[in-house]
Image (cartoon, rainbow, N blue to C red; front, side, top):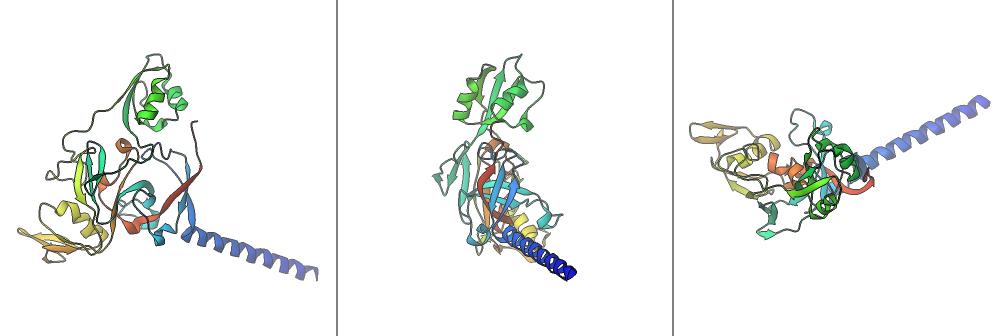
Length: 298
């Protein structure tokens, strides 16, 4: 009798464990999960070390402009999607929107868009020669990853409000905004001299939308070649001066998926759509919710 009771109790515990595990997997897949912020690209909205709740249901209910989204790294083509690193950015443009940056200011469909709360750009901080740079960074919660050892001049993410606070520190000589980027940058999307853009002056460019018909030319192919060949799985080639898709002449292309354009809130410290292009909406795993645990100012 005693052995029978023990076996029954053991089976009940085992079933309860399986039910709890199944519930956890369902919640993880469809309701929420947690991620730890690793980069400075969203500073000061999110800081390295913050524990972020990810709302998984946004995959089915949809995301909208200005949402913070968590997504699989779209450049890790050599890895299975579920094994790719997670990135966190803010949606600047939805499918069909026209995006442009003018002197660091975002324009959406030709209209100046509001800056995200706390958005930062690069500032140059000059410290006194005897200043403890590490202590200064810690006092103000600045990312230690950006510290340049042995230098009294540091480049930090800041905005006018944060810069005013930094300037009050007794170790600081002055705090000034960095000059805006100038000239074209070959490492920015779409990596073509036909598009002489930089991080502060970018576009205008229309975000692809499912069902849109785009006329493809040699000039605009750099905008869409990754979409066509990688995300939507077609073979691009050429025969003389003729572009081919799956061995057929390519004059027009109908978009098969929706895409968005994402930016980091720390504009000068973010590798985002300006650097690698449009984000497929199906790479998004959820919307960034509240920060559950923050490193704060330590």
